[in-house]
Length: 130
Image (cartoon, rainbow, N blue to C red; front, side):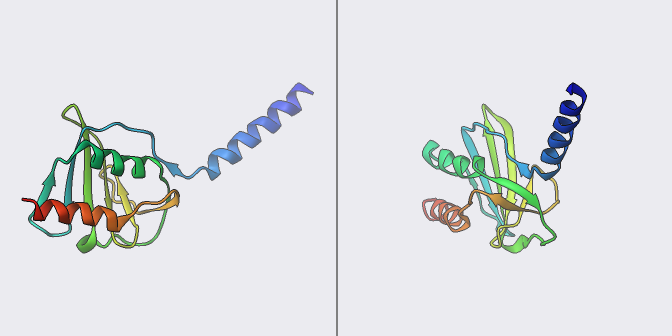
């Protein structure tokens, strides 16, 4: 009886592991840098409320691989850091295609949502306030 239970448990864990989408571990950050497409302007730093807002959006996401391509002309490259050390980086384009932590494998959000237009507004606001 124990043997059947362990076999069923192993199969269930294996199937669950195979179906699990790429997910994001919770991170903390106290600084952010944002680059946009081919623009020569980069946003360095922001108020903690802006960092927390973007970080909360990102922390809520789970990802799955996609065959869609990254549109580099509309892509933002976002770097989070904590105490001077990089903790997370991603690219996202206008179509919601992501690159995660320096890899060029393309991902789409499988759960959660990320507001590209909100990120764009933050970046544009920082340009006008300079």
